[in-house]
Length: 495
Image 1 (cartoon, rainbow, N blue to C red):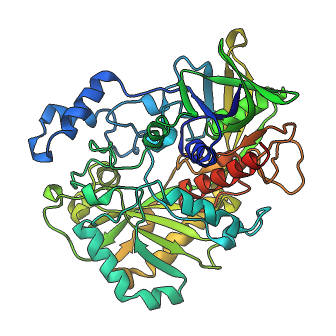
Image 2 (image 1 turned 90 degrees about the vertical axis):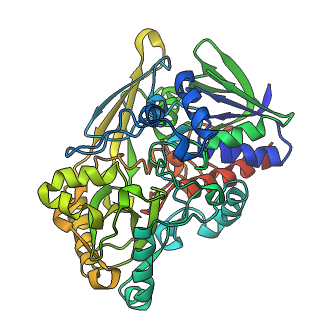
Image 3 (image 1 turned 90 degrees about the horizontal axis):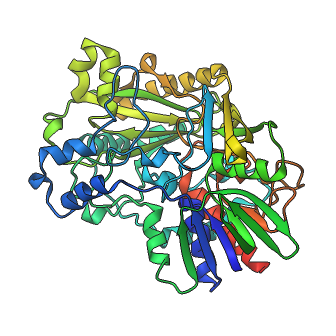
């Protein structure tokens, strides 16, 4: 029997495992563990050993396969051209969705394979209704930033000029509730080659992936990683938990569940026997629109740059909503910009050299969510998971209002927000979702306590976004990891 079983290998599971190993406890991490195909891995390894100017055109094309943008939008993100981050073959989980953009990941590293690397804490005002103080996350923030790379990375010319214009108007923007800063990213910026492949996957592995931390943990004598273990249910028995998978079982004194909002919710509903009983997932609405710079930047296609977010904009305007609105500002890239250009027709092609792309998010209080329900899978193996999205109508109005407010700052930002070109993702499309078993002061069915223990369990601790009471608009990964670190330490106190 292991001291602790950690389910999953994404950011929350890894943060919990780090906290436990730092306290000298035995940890077994179990994971579905899908990984990159060998044929693509060989291409990535070859490119990683070369400078960008040495890359073969065929290798570059291989890494970009399957993610061509069009006027209808940007397809589900891949890594190095592979669909493995969202593949569900062999898991026993089958998904049926209606008007929902969320997808589970059964990959080693979870959604950190395809994330945007943004690293902001939640603002205390936006989590004031949580059942513990915002300050309780501070030790977790410090711990996570202690093992995740976050060196500054040089902005593109577009990004640098945008940040300079915003800095000149910093005080005036602040009076209107707007702050602009260089994007804080989980990237080893000191070694960046600025090859422009960030949105397809960094060949040099400089964007943080939680699998890198798993590999570091594997050298510890009390840590074990077991891929190919797809957990289906959890059964508490006296002084331990029986972790039941497909033909495999494990006993653990305690379990930390961090498989991601859809798999974790399915495992808990199935373990409770709550089949066909929907729970509501919270979401931070994602929307996309162009920012048109007054000044063009020439020869963008030839510039050496990174294509992650260049800047973050935070808006606190009570005339828009009572919570922060977050915008991630991207410079020119050959994924997002062509999609908006295609949607804008001839005018878009003429203005591409001036175009920035803004990805906006709203707090879950004013965003549509989606329902998750499960039934037993075929032959009693795995689960059928049904996702049902809610209406976007009211949230769309708030998002449009926020973009029009930003448009009024055009002179100060040196760029105009093209509000008529706004496009909305379905609930879950921004992958800022959770809250199916939210932490609550009084534990009732389909909630958790402040230690992440779902109602009905004493030795199971939920550590991913499924236990969050709300989803603020700012980036989600750092706070989720900090909360997982906090919960893991509380669980360790009970060991």
